[in-house]
Length: 528
Image 1: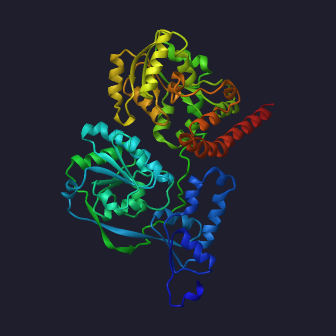
Image 2: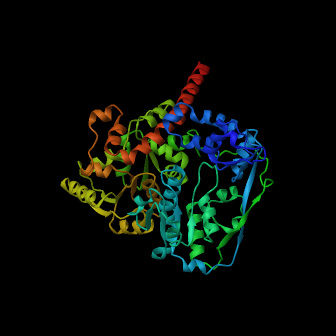
Image 3: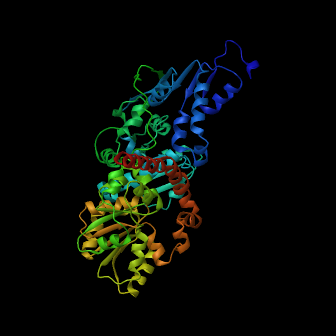
């Protein structure tokens, strides 16, 4: 390649493949546009196999070496500039200069839809889509009712969203005009690890389509939040969307054609790499230990007494979710009692000097099908078939399923569910929805004034009703139930067990257990 270049040539590279190409050919590019800092993304999204061989550390070293070959390194994100400057690189920012125009009427002419565009195989896109569909959309429906617009999702993998109420999944589209003609606002609620900018937000603005996203994402782009509908939480984003659809403010920006070089916007602040984990085990320690029940017997006793309460079961996946998801952490923190489900949580508690036995929602649900109780039972979630079978099994031992609701999560309003369960005189509410949504819904029911007992049980009703096979006793005794479930449903559980739980166990929970045990050992030696 070098023989094709002359001293007068200007070499400009963009993204990782181009950087590798010039590095292998010993070419020093005049300018490199760093769309992302790949080592930052690797720290959050590397699979377990890559983590075990310390890929992120090696990638960071190699990336730094290659970037040093460029005479100038330009970033679109101010966060990436700070990250690279903390590594000794003289990075600068390029900012697209936006300007607003009066095109308020145009939003009425386009299709009435909230647009999401992205390939779901990329973890940040999947997380943003989940947040839009399962957090923002329900909050929007609570405010707008049946007038709430539909989410129009396009990109590889979005066709799987087609069956979700209030969502139209277009899948991969050949012509983006087809997608943009159906929406009048774009929403990219991307949070978590930050590197690069949201190209889709910029693209929407360039087409004159208003956009909504988190403030920190907008700040990273170097743009004023005045031309965006900026909100950080699901409630804030929903409020901005209501303001857009029902208010009078004009949100129809355009982007000028030129690109403006701007390096002075970025302050020389300290390194601000967003952590992959929002909360450490130590930060969640009190939530885990202060309200822990001793085991299954105490769990069932609390759930069957006369006073209302909410019990939160905690397993390894729950800890993972609580470390990253604000709504799930709030549900765990505000529970009246918590139980230890699974050996990782019980091992951590034992390292803190707290010995408990396993207590699960599945065993609690199974007990209703085997023993008669005076409690009137309510069921939210699970399938219609599972609900019918569960009701039949309850009736065989004389128990009453007084209420069941099998609609979709996005269609439920907690206040309506509470009202209906009161009318049915429900004593115990089982929320058969997988985490984090089931636990967040159980929390919402409690906040809306449900006076009975509530517990989120995930897929336990499917197992108790016979829809899903229960794990054999040998599997339960050997703590390998997760393998049994993974084999049963690999498409659904591979991400949970392999990509989320395994790294969390190895790199976060195990070190916390070790720290507690070392601390306890030192304390005992000191006392002696």
